[in-house]
Length: 284
View 1 (cartoon, helix red, strand yellow):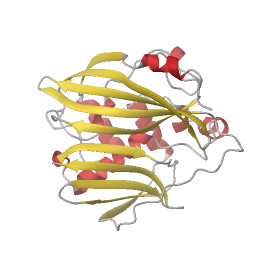
View 2 (spheres, rainbow, N blue to C red; view 1 turned 180 degrees about the vertical axis):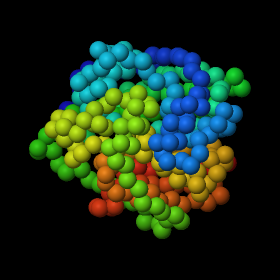
View 3 (spheres, rainbow, N blue to C red; view 1 turned 30 degrees about the vertical axis):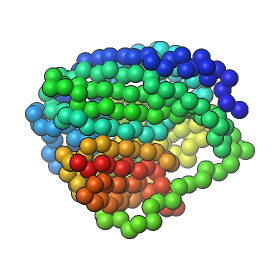
């Protein structure tokens, strides 16, 4: 049954939040080290795709975090009563490169709140639109979807995994994300969600088989793979869609293909060929 308070949740549509930040080279250097890059971008260099998530981190006091480690709802985010939340995906339109050292301005808006019945119960989706601008104008527009759901039940049907694309990839590489990588990425993005570092909470409370690899981290790994095969300077927009989860120490494959108009990369768990995320880039 859908949440009865959907009408009141939709009153959050149109709420906005603004802020200012600087595209610090120091934060980029830390992420470069976390991703084992041989060198870090320097001041004046373009910020790699998805690395804008290093900035405008919410300065939420620890006392204002919920049991899951995330900010309590009812402020900017609507007070969805469902306990579990996940990043479901983003579409990022690229207008103007952000360069390290740029002064940034942000405007974030709650664009929509919807609900539907899923296989394991009610789901609430909140779409958040963020516009980032430099002194040269709008740099990017991100449309992010956050999904809220109930805790798992023993009677819930097993999730139906999505199969990877049938077309043969043009490239593929093996990867994994251990607890240290998850911890460092959470620290860099000021993400205190306990499913990424507290294994007892992740398994006993939220019902996962292990620590969950952050959706934005997986998106960043996909964008790194695309950048190795398709120049990010040619990407006009990219859409990430989370279709499953990958867990700490689990081996997964990143594969992709491209042509003159678009490129696609995807992450698939190696053990059971379970699709975790797709990234579709529009080539200009």
